[in-house]
Length: 220
Image (cartoon, rainbow, N blue to C red):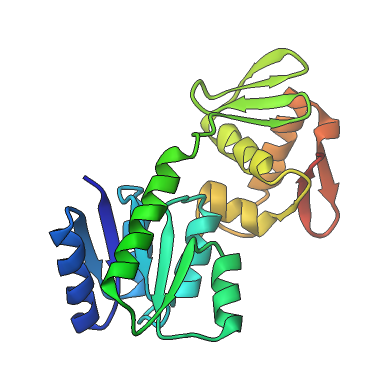
């Protein structure tokens, strides 16, 4: 049974969507603000999120951006009164899988929910990340570099996964800190540099390029 998180601060609309989805066999949870939506969605226990944009606390755009930055791949259908092309494009480019405007027909929302759930179920699960001769097996948590198997610590694993999901992209120290150590970690710490040095030692210094004054990049 699919679990759906409904993020909507208008009680009437939230109740309407919840009743409709439950009558069609879905398990639903309703939250009314962006902070709660972020917390619930991060658990990974939902199969789909129906997300409003105008929310108390974090707005929907922020929730969506932070979920995608945290590598949460749960399908998101935005359901909002905002109907400008600019907002629609911003939402889709920000990681939304679909966009519906209010007022809406429940039959259409239901069809889109079913479509996104089918698409997500058909998508093959990525278990090995690869860049050139460097690979990371997400199941065994081991890396291979030039045919060598390399054991990694827990933090090294998360850091390498981040690099491999963004090959060729410059990642700032702040981005790395927030993804690997959390937002509360001291931004003045040199912990990122220490761990990048460790990865260079284990996997090859030439793979991790320093971008002076910004951060690091995995050579694609």
